[in-house]
Length: 107
Image (cartoon, rainbow, N blue to C red; front, side, top):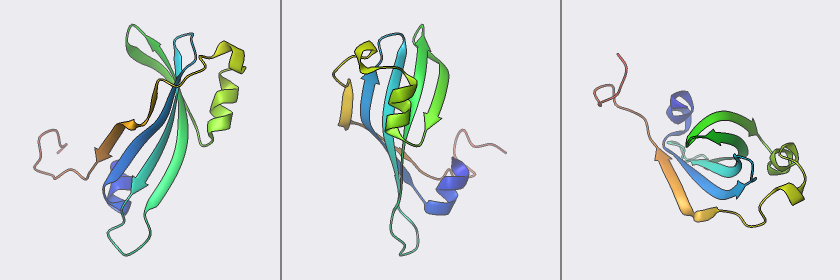
């Protein structure tokens, strides 16, 4: 991730949709948007993650470049909750380059 941030600058990760599959798995549909330091247009990449949770921890994660593929991987719609748990207005994270002198940076 730090390599990508170095290429495109700070990145915002938007959680567009979070779907509870109902068996300890969730499908997170996300979008990364990076502002280029140059006058290039912003970098945008959408992807989906199927995550399995146990005891509040992620124990498995499968990444898909297509939302439909992720939903197909979790099974037919009858096995999933009908309503998403979250939408894009709920969650946004920002990733920015770390300074070599910042806490948590590696030497």
